[in-house]
Image (cartoon, rainbow, N blue to C red; front, top):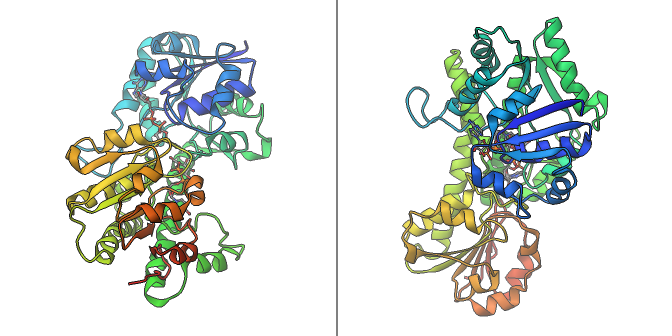
Length: 457
Ligand code: NAD
Ligand code: UGA
């Protein structure tokens, strides 16, 4: 093999990204290392640690050929010329910047380990999402070594979305590589360009300086999340004016300058990154003395929080201002369809608040029940039930709330569901995926997001 690549961190990004590189570059050896033994064992098994459509086939194609999973991070460092670092960078929960800044402890540990173990020059690639100028700090840590081994630090943020990771990796909108504007920096950038050029058209691989690359990642997530908060804000106005947010989204989305994507009103965005990355951006702006910019982006989060809160308040209000002992079925717990990931899922917030109102919450989801159980482990066991079958979840319920836009929820037999529920029966469609008029005709009282409710009461 020509080159060996190591990826430290075998999570939602490291696993799929490296599987794609291995599948598309048979001449490159790809090692994926993680300290989490269970995760690595799962990557080596038939039951991968993450659910992602199309991923099994790609992993199977390359695993054992040029794709290897290991817990031996040090051995990987010794072998590799290019080291991707794809460890988690959650929001800091302690000390300076708590609640906003990025917790860089995992990333820094890997940098120190690379410096300690390496015996030959390495290109170290930031795959994790990091604050602007992290590469500079990393360069300092890495290059402060007695042996004078050379380390080049590149930024190569990942833009895949969960649930569509495989197609995003196969046909990315762009690959972004940031590097130092020096002869050595340019050489390192070229090496990484050559990897992606195995399958990505050259014009889609763009190179910038390191800081632009780091900031572009935070900016992309901030803009995407901002669109959701913007349409949700308009949705609130729709609810009180009899305008329909789906119609408004369609009308504005046909303007080619606005575009139709990411205008789906919902109970709010979730996922491990939008909130974390915006908070990180806010922290950076505050740090660099830009309070107006910080405040501007903070509103995207404030609107998202308000949206989730409004959803639960609306449920309570519509159901005669009491949820005590009412059975409420949450359809979906993942933060979006086609993933089992529940990190920052709005369903977590909704479930907790319903339990606070003393409702009995039943959760159903095709892939996320294991994670849901962990997320809600500290709630009283008698107030939460987990049920694989949506029909059983809805049986005897006073209300259903659609939390995730799983396609199968559109095709359920709602007549059968209606007949099995307590009356009056309510549906709160937090994703606007159901046919509200048809449900109303069946007898349901139906409330969506940013659309007028349909009530028999
Ligand atoms: P994750 O938590 O799923 O995976 C991170 C992995 O790193 C874990 O398995 C952890 O055990 C491992 N790890 C931590 N410290 C380690 C160490 N010292 N040595 C070896 N392994 C170590 O996280 P993720 O969702 O894959 O996200 C990783 C990064 O990518 C984050 O910065 C995130 O913001 C960014 N990102 C995520 C997504 C996404 O869709 N999840 C998309 C784009 C970017
Ligand atoms: C997002 C970005 O889309 C990726 O480009 C980025 O790489 C990734 O974050 C990251 O950095 O982690 P992801 O969070 O996996 O990807 O999924 P999205 O499709 O962006 O959805 C995020 C949330 O927004 C979900 O809860 C989804 O249901 C919600 N959403 C999305 C809406 O409510 N309305 C929309 O129109 C679109």
